[in-house]
Length: 354
Image 1: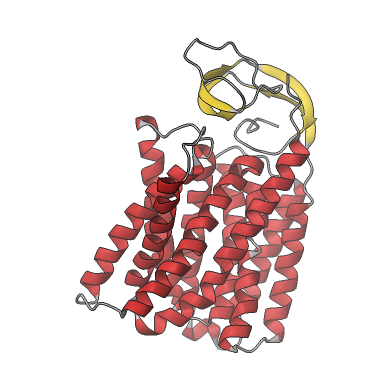
Image 2 (image 1 turned 90 degrees about the vertical axis):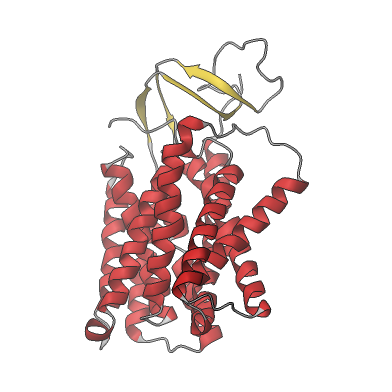
């Protein structure tokens, strides 16, 4: 029996989450620059099409994966993910960015972390300890500091509301993605980006009276989308699988800081003392989330599902003659009820009562 290494999974999850955050954070100031010459809906579509093109090219030129495949039982969850994370959230974000500065917009996107934590704990039974609770309050407090920047209350209220709505939609999407993350992350994001890209692009063309941007503009949007919406979301899906929605929220909360720093460098936006306070408060919240440690006696309920796995302490089952050889592999299998104690993170196998 293979001994499961939760520390290794935590490190890999952290690296995936931080890389995803960096790539997505870059999209905020870059999207702000592109918004000067294009309707937000059409830009959203092009960004997702860029992600889809990159991921489908990856699928065409790489060997078959051993990951579990999507099936008809996954359609409803995948559909909700596409609607919330691929249509509603990016539209709200881009319309919101059109009404605030890129720096403020980047920092406001930190609301995704506490929203993800709240949804994970309330709707999906993911444990929320005192560190995560305090971290959520700190990140919210940092957002309040931004909300009450001088002059922002009267002129940018709709922008703040739209950015908050985007974060809530992505929080729901994150938790649904975590539920589905046992399946092939590349297949999940390929479907999500293609459908969202086609829908938003057609809608954007209709709204803008079919005004086609220049080839150079389209090329830049596709390149940004392939990294910030394609590769970023794939890496984030792996992070959700490995460490759960709460810790993923901590790592991905670094994205707004990346966006804020590049907003200063690329757009020469001023850094005010309120922004520094907000960064400090939000950073403290993210640090507390990263320090969360969990070890106790817990019970795994019986479960039947299909995902990539090796035969560790959680995967002791018999094989049928048609099951694939070697490890890791994927096939439908059953988990019997088991009670034990070890350090763990709230991945798909560790959402239990406390």
